[in-house]
Length: 404
Image (tube, rainbow, N blue to C red; front, top):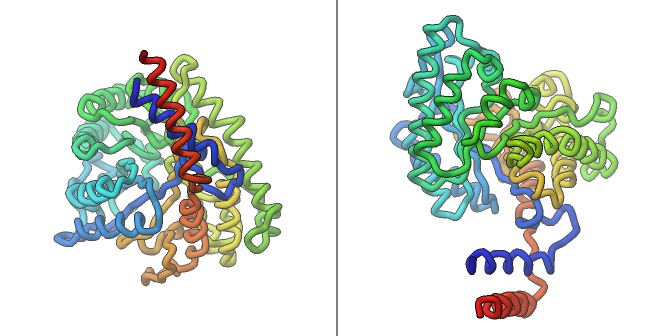
């Protein structure tokens, strides 16, 4: 109880100088902002160093939260998941990145991915073609997740998901025994917060709710949040950053999504006790109309470059979540740029380098990346050390009196 009282004292003292400015990041008032970190490449003997350096790069820019995604590939015909691929980082290399992040005091989520071999379609659209493939997939998948869970437990990782965007699988009740077994087995070896990263249009599906969110072992509801935030005309009319009217429009749409969809749904879970809400992904690309369909690459092929819309869109998110820590625990931005992630239109790197991907100039997202890390670096300082000392002294005095 003494430790709890002292912790409360620190938070209470911080509230004394908390800012009402939405562009000031207040860790005990605003949801945490972090980045997804993913690579679709196995770097062999140098892999551990690549992941450690990616974490060091994030930390050097003031990022304190990271969602790291292991990747494995499955055969769409047989359901078999390969433990090794030239496109999949080895778990020992992921572990090196996790260890580095924890040594730096970063908050870590592990968010395992599976992808079809050769990226033949979206993972969320796949269903096993027969029972043999279903059995093979879930056997291999459970083995994979238990490896990741052991890694998470060994390094005191704060959050772990049982998967991401397995849309067709989690909607099909034929998979429910496998999902329930998976959750039980992972929960038995991992003591941190356990969740799932649902697609934005699938988080409230009845089967997902019954088999995942209402499972007693599930602690948080992850949503890969690629909701539409503007229409074509509004996106086309958006101007140079800061376009206050467009930022307000995006913020208003985010507020509606939170107030009318995500937060009420999360609060209604577990018999009304609620479940913690995390936006396990949200991303925008540096092209016109990215706010219309944030999940789509189409704008990159059909629309002009528009780095201002990308920044304005992220600003709308930041403005909408200001002061909403009670409703929303974390937001993971898709995604930080690292080797093996080249050519992703969502590649974010504040140093502004074009790293040579043949289809995309990664430096285009430099303004958005700089905006986001700039926000994270605006943590307010105490008005004076005397104020903090006085607040703590008063709380300690009250505690001693209560103990007497």
